Image (cartoon, rainbow, N blue to C red; front, side, top):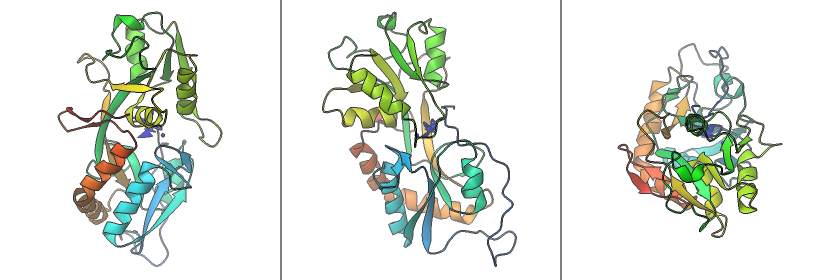
Length: 290
């Protein structure tokens, strides 16, 4: 997931902040054969992306995620072919991929993550409520709403909304789903959406790109509302998402920034097609998602 942004889910998943835990990793020591110390070890012919093989809506090996599609747009702009290095986004992800020179960019990083050098942001999103339409929550806009008292609330453990629920005394009926898991074997966001559709929980709270994806695919059975109105002292709920590269590869980062700026309209179109709620840099809603 966005390293759950702060966690992408992953936060992803992640994404945390969000549980976006890309796996803390130490400095890279490997070098590509034939290149000297200090060289930017970026493949000149292939846009090499580190990605999770089973992390929809972000990426999968079948190329069905929005990060797969954005990567294809970037590769074409850069005049490169596209290649993926597949690795579950759990602890050690960066060490085993980017920092081992097996790829040159990681997508879906929360801006400010100092484990990597950050590109410019290519989207900004927000956590969202997800619920069945006409179930009493259609006009709810914040987690402090008294209608949540006594309700069965789905939450990804360790993400910012969990802190807000705790502060408001709403943990008694919370159904918690794991954050940092190997998505080859577990699917917490899918499980939450399924539990919601079948009435096992009343409402869910998910990172917006994930919530929007499941609502978009539900055939009208699920609806989302972006959480734009939490109190100012609440944990951050809105995050900008960047591409991560190795520290010191400044020319490569500038090249990515130029491609992002040029392809931003197409990137935004792809995100909207997946139901991703989108904000501008002043946290105004551009697209509601779902």
